[in-house]
Image (cartoon, rainbow, N blue to C red; front, side, top):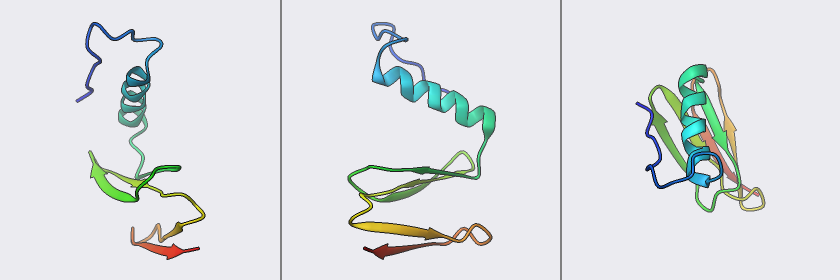
Length: 77
């Protein structure tokens, strides 16, 4: 299900609107993995069949993803 911004939110210029556009893209493409960078924390979550991997800053940690098994190994830099 795609969440829509509130009517008071301008749909073409807000950061919230970008999130909804990404949701539409994810539903259309339905990727197995989605890797997001430059987050303050690391997190892994399964979202509608897509494994979303949120990466911390590269100078702190990086991840090695085994695509065959789906296992993630986090390594300190």
